[in-house]
Length: 143
Image (cartoon, rainbow, N blue to C red):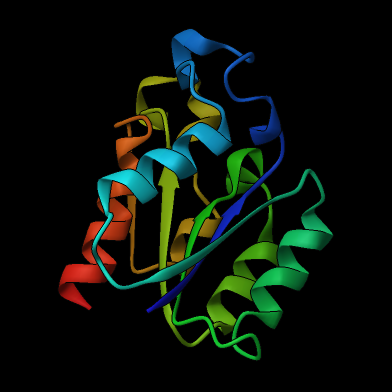
């Protein structure tokens, strides 16, 4: 299985930005954690992050032609605002899982509305870096 992992705006600041909310791990630390936790399982993953909504849309749209079977996406703040990203996610025919490090329902009111989530099979959130691990495990064991 070939999995594309996408990170949205400000995830490049993980480890520094609000560690009490998002943890102390960088996105690279999370990627390394996943690779170590799933060592021995057969899969490929490519991790990309951008602060640009356009980049994320382009990557989702290209995922099929790049032979990805699944997308794990953390749209970050775009979760609550981007109909355009939702439309791109819906256009991808493979599996799609949205992840969030924090429990968005325990935070500000506006974070409880997730526009992009409607395009994914499910949402895993609130487990820190293990949100990503759970998404990978689901894809590798159930799909």
